[in-house]
Image (tube, rainbow, N blue to C red; front, side, top):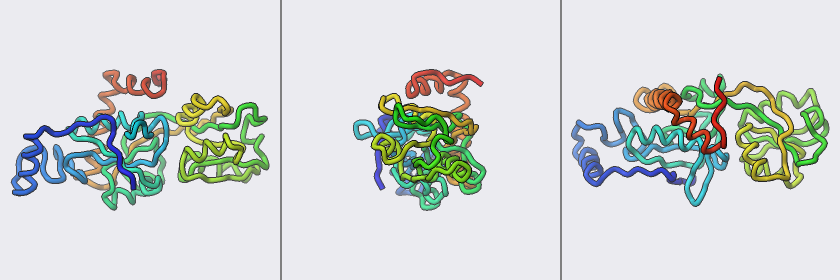
Length: 277
């Protein structure tokens, strides 16, 4: 399990840190911060927001210069900043996050990973309000004779394990007649297309368009209107922890969308401002 500190660090001042330590030792009440609780929110560690993800998933979260950066990182940094703590990112298997196992094991307070909101996931985890619309796209080597899923009959399509792209590909597989090749992460999937190990790949539009921009030997040739929306996951039915984090983030997200902060963050990572509904 790899742990990274984000590029946006905030440390408690010496006086505040000392006060927090005294509260933890003496067990005295009062103040916003005590052992494991910050501003009324229970956290795994009282001096940080611990965030689980599965790297890389550029531009949402990826390592740059030894730190984790990205669109999701900047959005959750609004929450860390509001709580007055640092953010620490834990790199684990994606299924641990979507199943809720990571939260039950107290590996993290909240998760990130451009996670599509689904009914199945909502049964296992708490999920914030949607923070971005998304869809699935098809990527192939540039110049390949494939423009649709139907063109890939008898061919191999790479998918990322436990994603809605995998689910979409499986739903169409029998009717068309291609074979699915699963990969544990985005980098393995996209590079398999470049290397010719698979004929195409299906994944979220944000990550594959970003990959195409940096790799001119591949291209996105089709979009599938799946009507997806992303949310951040946390522990479900957790009144002192996950529930409060979700409620707090939802308020911060609404504020950021109103005052232009969300648009600035979006443009930083996608080069354009988000489409208005």
